[in-house]
Amino acid sequence: MLAAERRNSILEKIQEEKKVIVGELSREYEVSEETIRRDLERLEEEGHIVKSYGGAVLNETGVIELPHNVRRRVNPAAKQKIAELVCNEIEENDHVFLDASTTSVYISKAIKQKEHLTIITNSIENLLELSLVTGWDIISTGGQLKAGTMSLYGWKTAETLGAYHADKVFMSCKGISKDRGITDGNDETAGIKQAMIASAAKVYLAVDHSKFDRMAFSQICGFNKIDTVITDQEPEPVWKEFFSSNGIGLIYPES
Image 1 (cartoon, one colour):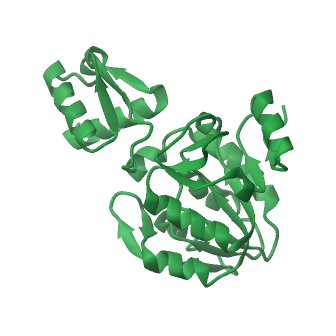
Image 2 (image 1 turned 180 degrees about the horizontal axis):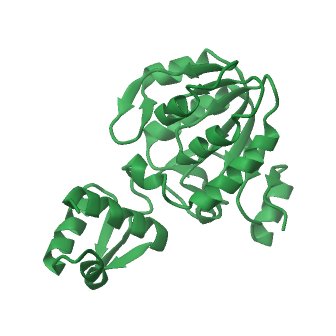
C-alpha cells in the first residue's frame, strides 16, 4: 500500500471511529509506529486530525475538506436510506438543486427512474452519474474545480445558481446544532449552499444521524431556512420536539 493510500485509509477509520491509536494502526498496516506517526503528522498539517497522546482524533471543526474518495465511503448505508426517502419527495418535472455532498451522489443514483427532471448541480460526480439519463435537463453551475472534492466553487458557481429558480434543493452539511444551526467545513462550501437556498422554493436538509449535535466551522443558515429534514433513523425525542416547534418537517425510515 502506498503512503497516500494508507493515509486515506486512516482518514476513513478516523471518520468512522473518531479516534485512532498508533500501535493499533501499526499492526493493522504492518508498518512501524514511526511511519504511522509521520502519517498522522501529515494529516494534522493538512487540517484533518488533531494528534493526541498515542494517537489522533478527528478535527471536527476543521476548515479543510476531506478528500471526496474518503467522504463517499463514510456511512454508505445511511446515505442510501436518505436517498430512498428523497426519491419520494421529487416529482416529475421538478427543478432541483443538488449540492456537492457525497449524500447527493446517492440521491442521483436513486432518482434515475423519474420521468423528467431538471437538475442543477456543482458536483462533478453528479454530472457523471446522470450523464446517460435521457429526457432530463442536466445543468452544471460551472466554476472552479476544487482539488480533491469533485466539485465546482467560486463566484461563477454562485452567479449561475442565482440565475435559476428551483422547486427544491437537497443539501447536506457537517453538523446541525440547536444553538448554531446548520454548519459546514468552510466559508466557500457554505456560501454555495446559501446561494442554493436563496434560489429554491423548498429547502430539504438531507443529513445522517451522526451530524446531529455537531458543529462545524462555517454557518450555512439557521433553522428558519429549512423546510424539511430527511435523516436515516428516528432522531431523539428532544430533536423531534425541536423540529415540530419550529415548523420543520421530519422524514425518517419507519420501523
